[in-house]
Every structure is written in structure tokens, then in C-alpha cells.
Length: 591
Figure 1 (cartoon, helix red, strand yellow):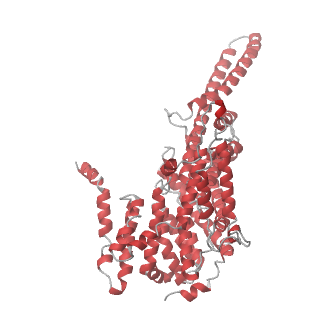
Figure 2 (figure 1 turned 180 degrees about the horizontal axis):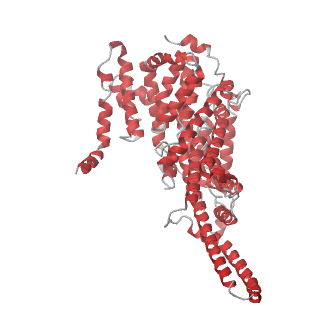
Figure 3 (figure 1 turned 135 degrees about the vertical axis):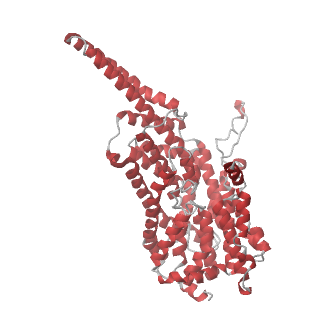
């Protein structure tokens, strides 16, 4: 009776949690000094939103809409101002990147890339793990980590199913071989010699049919529901494959500016900070971000792969796989690759557009040389990374998916034209919730600045000034990497960026140093299924348990933060001159 009552009460969690989220910090909204009214009310809204994001009492994007009515009602920021900050240049960059990613998925090019990599690495378990991680890592730089993970799950399941089929075939062959040996021992030596030749012929025929059977039977059964549990060794391998995909997706998103929402939150806040103090945007471009984050991401991915090999493959990492397993895995990959056929007209166009976009991103404002963004025909400061991104996104709605049949009227065929992208399909795939969440972050940043709350928090955190710069950064990143395992990484970045900007200014540390570090740390969430969509997707396969994820994820979480500390204090320091506090910030700091 009591359990039923508690269960029924728990179903009302959204109502109770929402009410408590508004009541718990209510003193901030009603008890404050006259000189601290705006800061206190702004803090109230942020605490309410943080509690709702933490409990997920209502959908995270819905919580991100609350600044539109809470800040105006409390007299913190005007409605016209707070509504106007929801769409920024970073939002359009993110939107364009999602449309390009949609074209990659629509054409199937991402699947071709993944299977080609798997075909190259071969059947050795540690190399298969490397192939899975590397493919997901690369794809998640350009498409959503959710899509990158989702497309790899069928490949994992097909490989596991084929290895299982190979084991069964091998056991059947061994049983036949032992039975033949037993019967042969009961005949005379002359008959034994004769029967031996027949047996060898029969075994050769059986092995040949077995080889063909592994390929055909495994392909037929790949993807079917398993009726019996995996062997311990195969289950350990399945766990390794699943976590390789999840880690690749989480780490890969840090390598590019559009790869993960926290990166764009940082970019927008940095641009806003620089515009306020210098009148121009920050030096954070797609090329510069990739110059810093790509080596970091690559280093973290390699260490993550080595850690998974150590945990799940152990001492068998250098042991060669037997021929039956090798044949089954290669057959599975070859079968899926052949099903794709040749590069289609649509895939070729999407590939050209994708390569051209990356070229324009990298050479708009490259380090130490003039890029196309500074061309004489363009006004200075008018072009950003969102410009080519949206331009080529629009082009994908015009380019035909197939060769248009407009010149075949004489053959009796009707003319046809089908673009690569349709707006209806794009709107169904776009994560509108993430776009709204980005907007909510910009709204919080605007309110924190206008109310003076971020300045006040920065002054209160001056206690960190007594610590070495790198130690303070390491401590903050470790805390953020832990927190982001239980909260949205975008929400974490949203709440922290304005505070870190003011903390850096008050302690005379380069703002980019703290803000960039934390934006990357927000993506280092490897421990729990709820931490990121890739974690949740691989957990849903049934191969993993929460203890599996925690035990494997905790060390790599720490290793990733130490890699970040190394990167920001070495090549990051050199690229962005982070060891020098810019004079422009000194002359404009408000005491």
C-alpha cells in the first residue's frame, strides 16, 4: 500500500519539482538590499532554471524559454531585449551545420565513410575498436553526435552477430571432426588408410560449405533478436565496441567549433566580451578553434582507445584472431559495403559541398595569413563562419539528388526534379530544442551582464587569485567535467560562461583561458547514460550496465581533463597568447 502510494506520488514529480524549484530560492526575489535588487532577482531566475535543468522536471528546452517572461516580470531586463538575444550569429552557424549534416545523412555518405574505415582496419578486436572510435570521432565533428552514434549501432550488432555465428559453426565442425575420429579408430589399418582419405575429402568439403555458410547465414540472421545470452568473452567485446562508439562521439564533438553546443556558447560569449571592450569580435574562428582543439581531441581519442583496450581486451590485445572469427567479421563488413553500390550522384554533390565548406571555414581567417574574409571586395568584419555555412546550406535545397530528367521527353518519360534536401524532412530532423537551449543561454548571459550579477560573482571569486593560474583552471575543469555527467553540457556552459568571464577579468587572467577550457570540459562526460545522447544510445543496446560505464568512464574523464590542461597551457597558450592579460581589459574593468 505504501509503495503504491509513493509510486503514484512520484508520477507527480514534474509538478512538485517545479514548485520546489520556485520556492527554495524565493528569498533571493523578496529579501534583498536596495542596492542589490537586479543582481538578486537575476540570481533567483538562474537558480530556478538550474534546479529545473538538474531535475528535468520539465523538458530542458522549455526551461530555456523561461527568461522570456521571468526577467521582464521581475524587472531585470526588458522583454524586447531578452527576446532579441535568442538568435545570434552562433545560432545561425549551428543551424547551418545541422543542415549540412542532414544532407550527409540524407545521401548516406556518412554510412559509406564508416564502412570504408571498418573495411580498412580489418577484424582484429583492438583494430575494430580503433575503427569504430575513429569513424564516430570523425563524423561527430560534422554531424550531430546522436546521429553518428545511431548509425554505428547496427554495425556493432552485425559484427557481434557474425562472430557468434562463427563460433557456432566452429563448434559444429569440431563435433563432426571428433565423431569421425572415433569411428575411424574401430577399423583395420588398411581400411583406416582408405577411410582417412575419404574423411579428409569430407572435411575439406565441410570446411568449404562452412565458409560459405558463415557468410550467407550470418548475413541472413544479422540484426535478428538474440534468443540466448552472449558468451562472457563476446559480451566483453560488445561492451568494448559500444563504449568505443560513445567515446568517439563525445570526444569528436570538441574538435570543431560546430561539433558541440558548448563550443558555440563559448564563441558567442567571447565575441560579446570582446565587442564590449574592443568594439570587434574575438579571434575565435573555425580555423583557430580547430588548430587548438583538433590535436587535443586526437590525443584524448587515442588515450581513450588505449584505455578501453586495457580494460576489455587486456592481455589478448596482441593475440591474433582465429580464421573463423576473422572470416565472419570481414564477411559482415563486406556485405554491408557492397550493398551501398557505387557513389551516387547525390553523394558526390554532398561530398563536394562538404569539402568546399570546410575549405571556406579554414581559410576565412587563418592564423598569420590573410584569408578570403579580408578580401578587398568585402567590408571588414562583415563576414563570419556562418556566412559560407548558410550559403551552402541554401544551395543544398537547389542541387538535384538525381540527374534531372528534363531532356528525355522524346522517350516518353515525364520530367522530374528532386532536390537533395526538402524543408519538411529537415525540420523533422533538426534538434530545435538545442537551438532554443542555446538561446536560453544567451538570455542568461545578457541578464547577468545587464544586472551586474556576473561582475558581483567575479568579485566574490577573487579568492582563486591566490592559486596558480593552471591549478585554478584544472580544479574548475575537474568540477565541470564531474557536474556535466548529471546535467546538460549546454546548460552547464550557459551558466558558467558569464561567471568565468568576470572571474578572469577580476583576477587578471586572459578570459579565453578559462572560458575555452570549461567549454571543452563540458563535453567530457563518459560516466553515465544520462550524461550525453551517445551514452544513452549505447546503453540502450543492453550490452552495458551502469557500473560498466562508471568504472570505465571515471578514469578517462580524469585523463581527458589532464589532456585539456596540457593543451591549454602549451599550444593553446601560444596560439592565443593566453599568458598575457590584454591591456584593453585593464583599462575598461569596472571596479
